[in-house]
Image 1 (tube, helix red, strand yellow):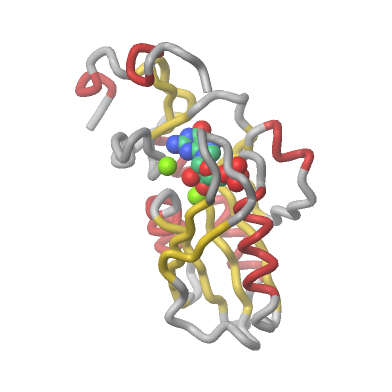
Image 2: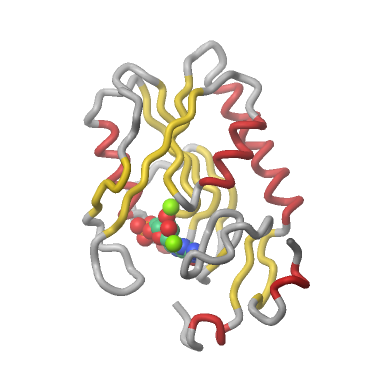
Length: 187
Ligand code: 5GP
Ligand code: MG
Ligand code: MG
């Protein structure tokens, strides 16, 4: 799929496919070095992290385990409230394991900070965070993101796992939508 297939839905490509892939390989090399000789469990947060998880896992040289969680934030509107519900829990007991959470994007950071403390309470040997994207508002949270792909402007982005109304996840790049797609108001 490329830009042409989106017609007028797409406003612009923010991060093209080759930059995403290069960054994911860079992060994988850091993770390989940091976890050399250790068991690593990747925890992907559904559904947004599906693409970065799949590419990151394949770029690793070490045989990492993979598991998935799905969470949803309570709250009305588009802002997460920080009150989180687990829709799908891990299959794995993470006590004593080296856990790396793989996320698509940190916006307010509320979801991820809830998730990190939830997983920390299960007694992992270590817990770190890898996020592909981070928005400016995230600086207000205490989240320690060890592996970060890109800091991006405060715009609503889609593609490479990220959706609008469950669409556009399968774009191989990250882009912004034309205002007419989401009703003409920013957010
Ligand atoms: P937070 O709790 O950090 O505010 O919310 C993070 C979640 O909101 C992300 O995991 C993602 O699902 C969603 N989100 C935040 N910003 C964007 C964005 O620009 N585009 C899309 N598609 N989802 C976003
Ligand atoms: Mg997410
Ligand atoms: Mg979404």
